[in-house]
Image (cartoon, rainbow, N blue to C red; front, side, top):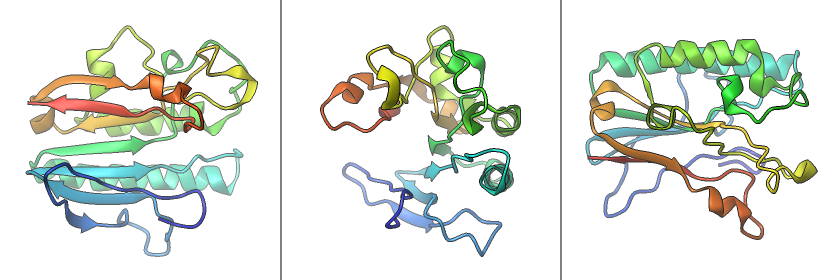
Length: 199
């Protein structure tokens, strides 16, 4: 964690996560707390917090796209190792127009830019299973509702939090969802937990 906006963690029930790494490879100068990876009961689990990228264009958006490129490179290596992997976290991208409520108010936001969506698609196309979209192809499955403009009461959400599964884990996928009711609790985060259940 950091005393700013950044921080990631992995918790396990009745197991001690075996820490593998605390930073995304590819840039030794990047000290933001955005990636952690551990083995939990035979599965490599990541917790990631991809940069927001706003305002765009600009250095923050460039950093987002560079981080995505590093993530794709590392994810490709994980796939080649032929081990079960879950890439879980806040990707700060709504992959398609279906993953955001009907609006034009976000058109200039980094979360839905073509470059952001292309980067996410390139990652998934390596062979990852987008668990929530796979099991819920016809439901928006929003995970984020901004505090502004009554977006939670209006269900004006975005799907920004994703669980990508390697083929070995995808074969064990039973259920996936979003605990959206938590978003409505007093003092809640603007994100709701996304989850998967595996055999």
